[in-house]
Image (cartoon, rainbow, N blue to C red; front, side, top):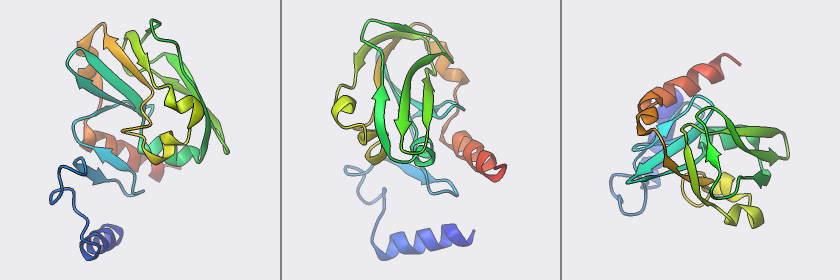
Length: 165
């Protein structure tokens, strides 16, 4: 509670607010570890996020995940045209601390891969929800999105997971 009060008072002192500048910042909330969790996204317990827009879903790893990984130095991603399956491996992230597999939170065909990550893997750290996205998928079963966590559920999941370590 004290941490949230400090964060709130600091944000107020710095005049930071997602509500006052919605055109600049997406809506967000903070977990205890101060990871950003965005509204409007779905989350997997394996720490991937999905933004479903029209017929395409953009996928990346969460701020919580990149924070635990540390400085990302390499990202391995599939080629466009490959089919990914829910809860199955589609790539890997290597950091100065660890290597971690990335699992797809939904099934479908990869229609685009973020080629920027080849040259600038650190985008996963600096902008996990925007410039650091990984793949775009045409979902084969959009109902799979319903089994993913919303922002509040994911925040609670992260808090419980961190408390258990």
